[in-house]
Length: 278
Image (tube, rainbow, N blue to C red):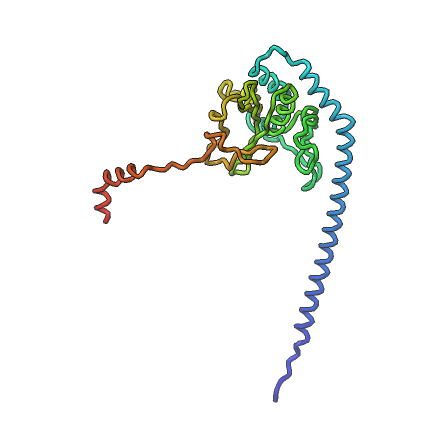
């Protein structure tokens, strides 16, 4: 006599599991879409707020700060003195993130994003605001002059803007490090047509904390480096995004390669040891 098995219960169990999964899936998708919508609306409101603030206060005040400094710049200064005068103004009363967490040992210092994940606005406990993508005010000179906070990118951007307005052509450049870090500085064209580097961040660090050689912030490309070459991905022009590492020999990673005669000389010198190992 054959026994007929009832397979309906396992089937019903699977159907219940599928239904629960679908309900959870729909709930999660709905919640995610609702959250995304609210985040987008909040981000739009935040951008609208800063657009109004920028047009009515940040831009006019920041622009006035820049113009007042340029108008008061001593016209009798030579090129080196002019660059240093500009760098001194740029770095004066500037809250630099790595200076706070580094030489000043302010372990509690941090930027907090106004809106998680999507906002391009950061604030700190001093009430200073810094921008990042997707904010349209990233490295905006008026914004930087108004809030005077950021890092090497903001220092280079403000220096470049002011220096360019005094009649000196300027190129902003940066390097990426393999540990995800980066650094930014500028290249300035002298009156004789030659290009030199100028690093406002190093200038500020030298006079606030020391540690850098006197004058290291300005000079020939061939003498400049900010990290070990093996830690550098490349040096790039900020505007064109073209790689310009070839300009900076001290930041080019060149693995040591021995000549063939050196290799044979080492083999000959260690021939007895090599033969004993065979």
